[in-house]
Image (tube, rainbow, N blue to C red; front, side):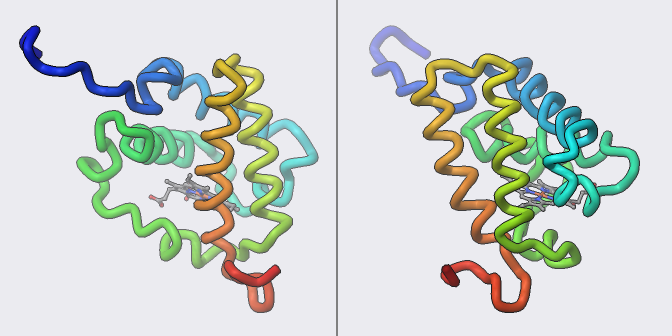
Length: 141
Ligand code: HEM
């Protein structure tokens, strides 16, 4: 960037600490999911080995938060709702996913709290839109 160019606002990816911080967050998210019984509603939908799930979430969030679009480059269009259709997702699964992510944000000391709250709002929108159980779809209370 030349000195004459205005400085861009930092992306959420930069604010949370870039690649290393994002990887720690995703690693913690799946470690919690794998060990804490309160997240079993989502754990049970995943394969035994979470390595692939972790890598895909890391690649997806990289682009979603304004960093390198790794998922697009390596896999393609995320089509997240379609990719989640094989898994029954209702409010219980949504809320377990979100609770696990909130705890991972706290454990990895993503600061300030306003950034964590903003991230949780974004994740809520995406997780809620993933609901696909009969009678428990997005837009249904
Ligand atoms: C709402 C509750 C959610 C549940 C129960 C859920 C569950 C799952 C499961 C079971 C998989 C398959 C894992 C695998 O094949 O290894 C998966 C994949 C994935 N999930 Fe979720 N998920 C949820 C929400 C989210 C949210 C909110 C995001 C993003 C912010 C997300 C991003 C992804 C990505 C990127 C993949 C990999 C897709 C692929 O390439 O196959 N998920 N999820």
